[in-house]
Amino acid sequence: MVIPSSVIRIRSCLLSMLLLAALGGAQAAASNETALSLAIQASTTKSTLLSIQFVTPQHGWAVGSGGTILKTIDGGKKWRRVPSGTTALLMSVFFADSSNGWVTGAGGWLGRTTNGGESWSQQVVETQQPLYAVSFPSPNIGWIVGGTGTILHTADGGRHWKEQISGTTAALYAAHFLDEERGTIAGALGTVLFTSNGGATWTPQVTQSAATLFDVFFTDAATGWVVGNAGALFQTTNGGAGWVDQTLPCGNTCTKLTDLLKVRFTNRQEGWIVGERGTLYRTTDAGLTWSEGKSIAPASLFGLSFPDAMQGWASGENGTIVHLQMTR
Image (tube, rainbow, N blue to C red):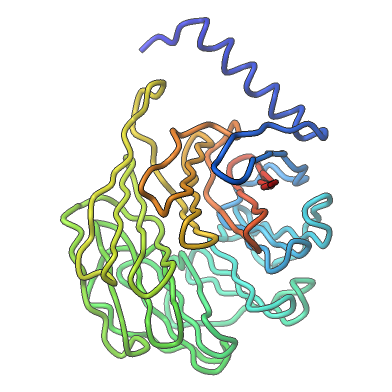
């Protein structure tokens, strides 16, 4: 499909506005209670940043290709690269607090830090599968998910990891735990797994879709979301006993359904989704409606983190990091 020159000019104007935002300008979108401003931050890398996490509005980390680990202590005004000890593709970062963190990656790579990411040590685990996501609901209890149905569990703060039986060979891309007992995992072929006993058993849940599901997030024990390729969006209001298809439409300006890569809610009402081509969706009514997807960066966005309800960060291709700031 040939894109009209008028559309190209409009896109160029949008990119120019984003560059102005990076220099201190702002791009705002109205909501019921808050306005949103966006600013592209200088990451000092062209690596693809697959995951980002802020534990406070000042302290954050981003990880990605080529063993890249970035750290900021001033809310992203300055990012600096720290040695990871690997060139593996790093896919997920999770910090339980400002000191203790974990990074997972290709080839079963698992790294741990106890000094805020200033140095990393590799932990050997009994798998060579890619490890796509790591999550700790408490300092001692954590899970890692990965290729061919891999689920690893620790009960001693990550010193030792044991494999749990997932009952699937599908790639598992994301995990979200409400507490040490209840958690949900999402993956390829519409796979959703649930545990209420700390992973002693994992129960499949039915989405009636074969979509690849890239992320999962719950706001409480009943209400959760999974997102995936080609606009796949499913919601549950009964703890996963049933999932309702709320796949987002293409919209007035898009030519193909957008892959949705990360979903986060800052409270029960306000939620965010990012995906390919820098697309951002937002809801302020618990997902009853979503804003039409807007491109907020000239690159696909894979990571999303909110340390509080008023600001967040997204990360993606070409070292892209975008700061999202809400104002009342």
